[in-house]
Image 1 (spheres, rainbow, N blue to C red):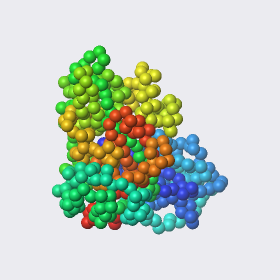
Image 2: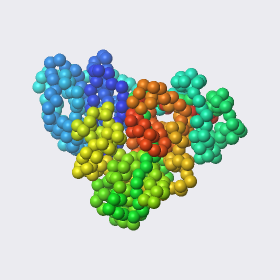
Image 3: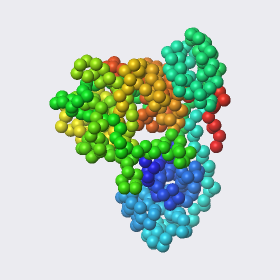
Length: 495
């Protein structure tokens, strides 16, 4: 939802750094400003997300060994840590020890009440010693990190010895979706010319047709979180019974999906989900409201299953199979989502003290659910996101990913498409779940996920069944990623 969200602009911060959170009139939203002290006079420059550069306007602070600004201080007109908007401006300091407030920079067009609110703050600073007006250095321009940097094949771990044969089938699935798109026509036509290529031929094909680009986070780091997902098996029925009482819904009729890119090209691939209330679009019902019958979903039940936590994890995985009472199997896949944010119930259980962070896994969450059935529904409601399904043809070899092609076990990857384009080959360098054993392979970005947010962030598809579920549930590894772009379709890295 693009309504008053807090935005964060991470930057590397030295030890002599304060952080200012404030309200911006220019963007009409709360912003997080990293601030950096200069070496010469300990002045603070504030970061502006609108201009992508350092400014001197938000706040001026001088380190002082004589004066300490207590953490508990409540500034007149600017209550610390309240997050309230007062006359359009709110500010609080963190890590504020040994800082003396000199003044607050504001736009002259602010009203008189803002000036009156700032006056006691200035008087407070003057109660110790009257500092000389700070010498404002010229702003330092710090360019944000680009998400990509040109790399070399030799930088990809084990590239020369890796087996590309299993990758080839997944690559062909991507070409089935991309072969008519600009940038992919030539490379997919070349792939069509290869008949039963061996491993050496495949290495030549990728090295001659692609350029590797390493993926970086906004803070310049190259490591990110790699998790796993799989296709689970559930037990269910097409009718509700005493055993099968948890509904699996198809998309509701009142769910709106608005493609923002059709109105704002810069928001390509971004969608807004909601419902109509009168003539207004409002957020769609959250998990709690859906479970309590507020959404008009009667008649939208596709199946009924026997386990609430298994149904919850089916929504996390996005696809699965349901064994019916007669022994037959049906396949279901992601159809829509309610547009609400994804919150991790594993993280919530860690906060509750159920287990340590390093013990957080799907298996341990299920064990907790078995021991605390009376608390399960309230736990699940901590995640307002809700997924709706559709029944898939039984002859599909695997679940359909966001690219619209069947996924390939252990060679399809879910990514954040704000950085990595769907269909692209992605070299992943990580480790097997709960081990230090290298897991380096060329995969294909063919899926997305509500929890998959960030540049260096991937979700490894393990396949179907219990063993795949064990691997997926335990996978929480650190990894690096390289995207292979077809030559001639490389990303622009310039300003």
